[in-house]
Amino acid sequence: MKCLYTSVGEWRFKSPQPAEHWVGVRDCTEVAPKCIQYNRYTDRVEGSEDCLFLNIYAKRCGKHLETENPLPVMVYIHGGGFATGTASRRFLKFSDPNLRYQEMRLKDIVMALKMAKTKLCELNGDPNNVTLFGHSAGSCATHVLISTPHCEGLFHKAILLSGLIMHTEELPNLRFRYAKHLGYEGVDDDEQIFNYLNSLKRKSL
Image (cartoon, rainbow, N blue to C red; front, top):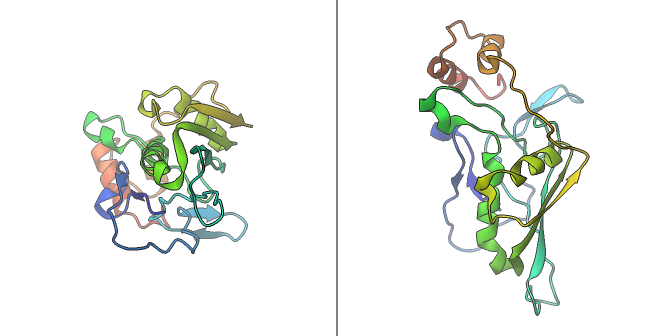
């Protein structure tokens, strides 16, 4: 299910937005593209920047989805070191207060949880019985989301599989160092760095 506008075009590096409504039946029989990432096994850049989708599976009872009581819901976050997988998370933020809306952190996941919650009743899911779980980096993300107020009411239980956050330290001047690695020759200024990164083609990033 296409649930969010990803950060493409004018929304690149910005917070995810709810997708537009569509008319009729949406074809969900094809696997959605994964987020753009480097595949170390093929030495190629794969995927798409238009990649924020939810894979939703609902148990059918005969020809219908309905059961006597709504079913518990499991929301899975895949691993991949926050860099690879079928829907890579984006970790990038700027210290400039005017660019705070650019903080990627875990906004994609939070927005996905919000969108899923609005659709659960239509798919016989119980919006008051949601378990968030993941492995590796997905487990770390789950651990962080347990403590964020932005997720209050979005899930009720959590399972951590081989990953947790004990302490998070940010590398100094990471955005500046990353931009210089990609050819940036300017000064350590958030707006200039953002504009430079935003001008690059996806394979360069």
